[in-house]
Image 1 (tube, rainbow, N blue to C red):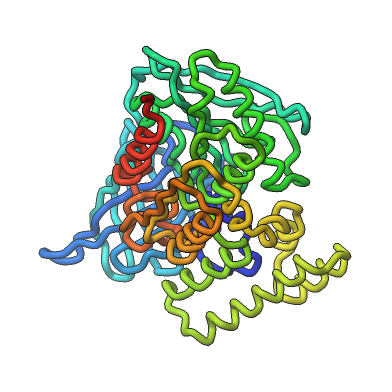
Image 2: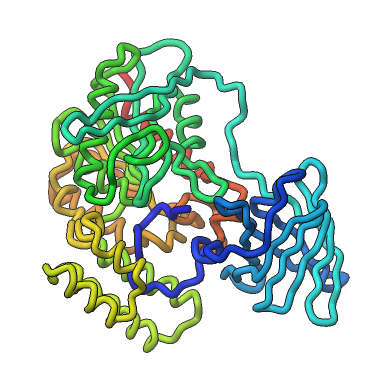
Length: 456
C-alpha cells in the first residue's frame, strides 16, 4: 500500500495506516468470505453512551492476516493488532496494547461480524459492519476503453482507461496524474479508488478522462528506481500526444489534474509545450519537498501530543538527514551518515533514490511562474501531508509573480489529503472513512473545469 503523498519521511516514527499492517500475524482461511477491509461498530459503554471501534484487516501475499484497531472517539491513532485469525467462520482480533480481544462470526455475505469485545473485566456484545467505500454505480452512462501508448523517448509503454461521454463531441479531456509512489490507474489506497470516482464524476459531466497506471504498475512498463518527477512528466506528455490523436476529443481543451506530487508533475508537463488548456492541482505542492516533510512531521507530532522541544529536536534531526541527501555525493558516506542519524536500511535506500533527491531539491514555484494556462489549486484544510497553510499561499504567490492571468486558489474545510470529509486529517482515518472523495471537492473541480471548457 502507498500513501498518496511524499514517498518517504526519513525519520518518521509515526503510527500510520501503512505501518500497522507490516507485521504478519495469524493465518487466514481460504474458506468463506474474506474479512479483509475496514469494520466499524459501536461499543455500548453505558445506557446513554457508545464508543466507536474500527478494525482494519489486510492479508499479505501468503494469505497471512494483519490488522489494526482504532477507537476514533478516544484517539485518531491506530494500534497494531497482535494477532488476527480466521477459522471455521470465526474472526479473532487481539490488541495486546490495550488488553483487548474481539471474536465474532462473519456472516455469509461478508458484510457483518457479530461478536464480543473483551477488555479487562468487561465483555460487551458488538456487531461491526464492513465499511463500503464510495463507488460509482453501474452500468456507466458513458463509454470505457482500455488504451495503451508509448513514451518513445524513455521506451515506456503506458496502459490506462479512457472514459468518453456517449454522445456528442468533440469533448474536453483531462489526464489524471497520481502522487508519489507507484500507483495504479485508480490511485488505489486501502479500499478507496479516488481516480475511479473522479473519472466517473467528470465523464458524467461531459469531460473525457484518461487515468493511467504508473511506470512498472499494472499494464505499464518501465523501471522507476532511476526515475524522477521530470521523467514522469514525460509520461504525461506522451498521454497528451495520445489524446491529440483521438478524433472524439478537442485538442484545444486538454487539461491535467495532478494529485499531491502529481501537481508538480502536471506543471512540469504543461510548461514543456503550449498545448495544455488548464491545470488542476489537488493538494499540489508549492514548496520544496524538504519543507513538505517538515510540515508533515510538525503537524503529526502536534496531534500526537508531543511538546515543542521534542518536535524541534525531531525537525533538527530531519534537517541533518536531508542535508546529507542534498550534499553528500559519495553513496557509501551518505549511507553511513544516515545510519548514524538513526535511519533504517529501508529509509536509507529510499532516501538515496534519484526521485527523493529531486523531490527535496525541486522548487515548484519556479515551474509555477512559467505556467500560462488557467490553474485551479484545491487543498483540504485538514490535509496533514501537504499542508494548505504552507502550500496554497506559495502556489498563489508564484502564479502572481508569473503574471498568470487566470487562477483560483481554494481551501476546502474539513477535507483531508484524499479530499475525504475527516475529523482530524490523521492518516489512519483514510481507511475507515466510507467517503472516497467529498462532494464539495468534486463540485468545486467540476464547476471550474466546466467554466473553463465551454465553447463560445
